[in-house]
Image (cartoon, rainbow, N blue to C red):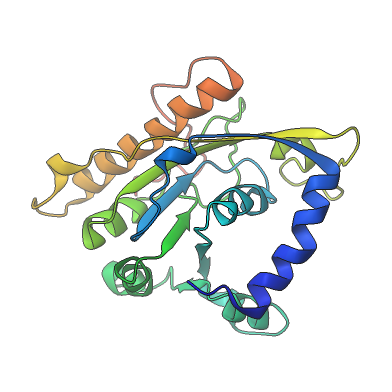
Length: 233
């Protein structure tokens, strides 16, 4: 993937700031495919998460394409940025879930990295473990057949906690990122795509992320994910 002007511009601005205000502990690079399409799945603890995981993947030569809500593509300047950086619009109101993910499937088949935060927003779990995720990540994995690489991150929440208005830049914080081996979803392939199957596959993916997170921060992840929406999808 050629990252283009807007992607390069954001990287040129952000990378020096990240190096100035943060330390980094990065691990698991051997689990990131050097070529071919794959889905990177990360936990969500802060609005600056994409900068941390994005830099990790970019430095490995796998610039991620983010799934972004369709509304961001409507008005400048955000329209210019997300379109110029070739981010992927997703229509969350679409009645056809497969059609909503078609651009992401195309990107994966073209050999690109697609980065997803399946929780949809920064976690509300009181202990900041991953919360119950949307099942689009499992649908995308089954539609595309692309490997799913779990990624845990810890540290961005110390700079910009959920709903905080101002970042805490000093003292310097440590950003930890750990990528794990692809999640085995082989037993779901070829089966009817039901709500139950998508939920089971999604939970398997998110438990892999949570287990990696436990390795970074310590503690035991919950057996059942926190669900602030009270939703079953």
